[in-house]
Length: 295
View (cartoon, rainbow, N blue to C red):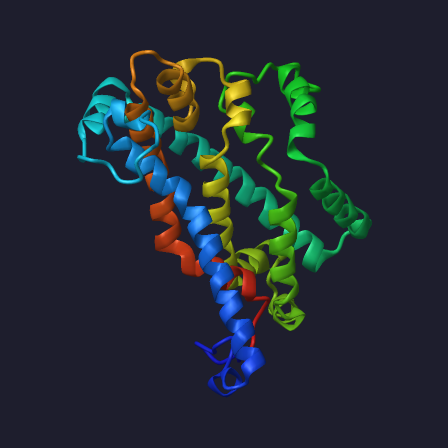
């Protein structure tokens, strides 16, 4: 088992000039990337506590002359955050249930059952990853407008958001790779003891897969929360919109809200995914690095 807390570069390695120089350059690059990533978030927050006049002054001020928190009270009182937050939770929960059901069964089948043509199916998943998501929007829209075999129009409903996200090729391949690392001896032992395929899947593979399942849950949550374009296209009823789309339609495009109000609304909207990430960030590393049982 790999030693916990093992450093990328050892103390003895740092005594070598070339290694020390490379390590220093790497740390500088990491700091630059971190600052470039965090600066837009910091700028949104700073703009939210500035006055409307100060936001548009030239040259712009980096730090507000006076912290103005009234924008948060204003946007909270005029925009129903809780309603649209509830819509977003329903969207995410539906995606999580459908996608977990699909990807766990698909990954288990490809990894352990290996049905005829499974290599061709794997090639199809890899090919799907090469297709840009934007290129799939028109075909998905046409299918949802007139669902084959049933003739249902699923646009402007939760299903227009749930069904296209139900099967995620990347998540299936990630979970399949994790299942590949679980020894087949465990599956064989369960079969000898009389366990069915479903019982083996439910009582052996899933409990061993908690780290990767937690990681996939985070990926699903962040992906659904940040998804703006697709729900903006398929959800036309304002009351059904998720939070990010509703902020754009009802706050950003509205003449009622000032620029600092808009920044305050965006700040409130980005708090939940940041909190979720920091609370569950350890599972991301665990789920990606673990490939099976090691001893």
